[in-house]
Image 1 (tube, rainbow, N blue to C red):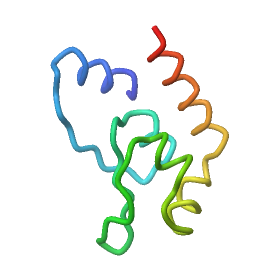
Image 2 (cartoon, one colour; image 1 turned 30 degrees about the vertical axis):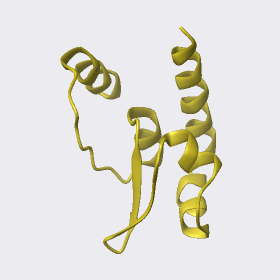
Image 3 (cartoon, rainbow, N blue to C red; image 1 turned 90 degrees about the horizontal axis):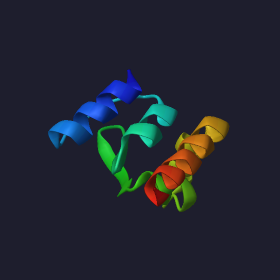
Image 4 (cartoon, rainbow, N blue to C red; image 1 turned 180 degrees about the horizontal axis):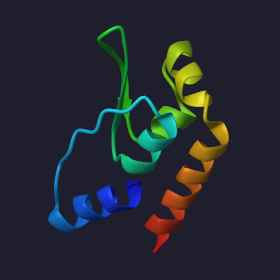
Length: 83
């Protein structure tokens, strides 16, 4: 499903808002992420910015849960960008 959504976004040049509680999915699908808590935006940035430089302990804890799959996603995205 992720692959298909990403393909449609690129092929149709769509801007989409995708809401998920799955951090790995958010990091894999997004150009930009907004991390929210209690209805407030805590940080907005690229997946790499959110993952590597969280602006609060809440954001760090939130994105740190799926560390292995998130790191794989960022490495894969970096490799894709190099092509």
